[in-house]
Length: 173
Image (tube, rainbow, N blue to C red; front, top):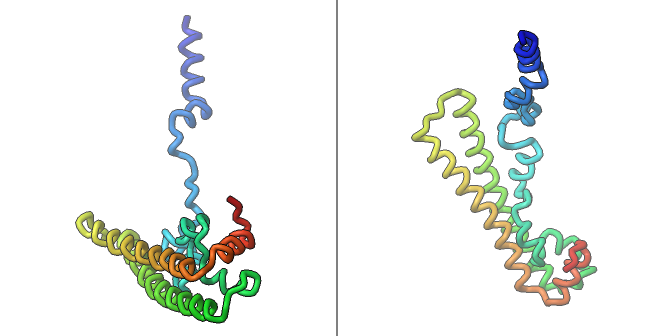
């Protein structure tokens, strides 16, 4: 009978059993991100935000048939935009990109401030809500800026132009 407790001790202390009991000792999927200047943003993210790029904010519009101004301009001939439409889309795009670049810069700064507070170990719970609120308000404004541009350009297109845009972009309904 002393053999069974001995086997149990060996089995319970085996690496396979220990790893099943303590799965939190696995390597983090974030290990490659520890060297980032802002932990929540990649260099590509920062570049995209700083230049007013889309950063995927307009997917609800784009994937539901609301054309984007940048893509419209690059496909203006295939879609058959008039000179007036090109002028209006170009104006909407310029305004959107200017606003998005300004908001993007401010968002990057807010994320840097949040990251710095954690990095320097100066973050305080009562300040955390304000820091997150500031960052997320900027992110929300960015998203609105991109989505609103899709609404604006869609309003000046014909149903046929919208259908052609969606076809050229590879969207099928």
